[in-house]
Length: 480
Image 1 (cartoon, rainbow, N blue to C red):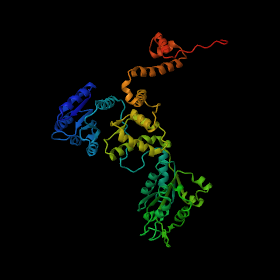
Image 2 (cartoon, rainbow, N blue to C red):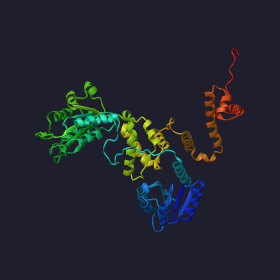
Image 3 (cartoon, rainbow, N blue to C red):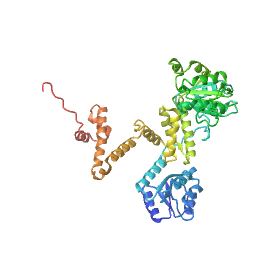
């Protein structure tokens, strides 16, 4: 029997929680202060622990810190009557899975315990990749063939001064690839990233080339641009396809002559850096349409490198998901979590149209919202359905689908819920009717076979068919 620790100096709280815990099939151990709680945690293994913040001697948060709750398999729930953001933040950093304010709703406690029970009985095992990157690593994560082919090409060009054009869909990680090229090369200067459409149109030239003092109204001092900041480094021009036509000749000069002129100056300056550009647009088509200079395209297209989409490297999804989960649990001061093998399969089966960026954002949301330390298939399927604004019926469990529909129904009822007296019969009928209907369709109306499949007597089925309005309508005879 799984054990739950209840640590609170209020005897009435301990009594209520003990009754709730034991009533749901757990064994309960009680502690009246922090020292007792710490001693019990040192002796026993607990599925979960309810710990009050303010207790005699040692406070609850100190208990969590002393037992290193962030690394513990025990799920810690911090309780307090003080609704202070700083206390909630400290609790989370110490490893609390939930922050419960008093007076608490017992239905909420029961929901937490149901989650603990599901975790304890889950047959899903943690996903553990053979090799893991450090959560803080900035390296590209993956080992798919298409990704390795990209890095083979990078190895050939990293040490050269050749201009590189990264091509690929949004969210595939073009900037990360550019940073890797810079890191693998021999340049000693900085990596400077410029997202062209993110800069207001009237500031793009100044941002890139810099300006002299009094070059325009308000220019009280001279300012260096991104080109000057990139000396002996790498200038990454993201979304190069969005460069305005009147700015394109000036970029062409940088690529062709390796020089530029700041705004308001009559002196040229040498550019001693490397340029890597990236786009998700079809530049050849833009050239044909007159929206991009052909000579600039030729100068950029010295070494084109296509970055594969996530759909082309699905085998990397488990490694990416594991990496992002550990990364954001650390950044957000959440207890360490891991995916189950089944949860990773669920992630791998999905089509990530936003590529790596969409997967990263989704895993970050899971790191914030999830409760358990093992994220299971149901957790992933449920959050995917919420992200899409609808339940994913192909993967969500039947019980979850029904539960979501009931919750939606009750939300719509609102205060009128108290006047309802027959919801049980209503929902049983709504589930029973489509069940009988589908089975009858599957058996071509053969009630003997349908009754056997449903596990009921055929007379019972015949009665239900009539009650549920499923009896086939009598055909009208010709001429009648």
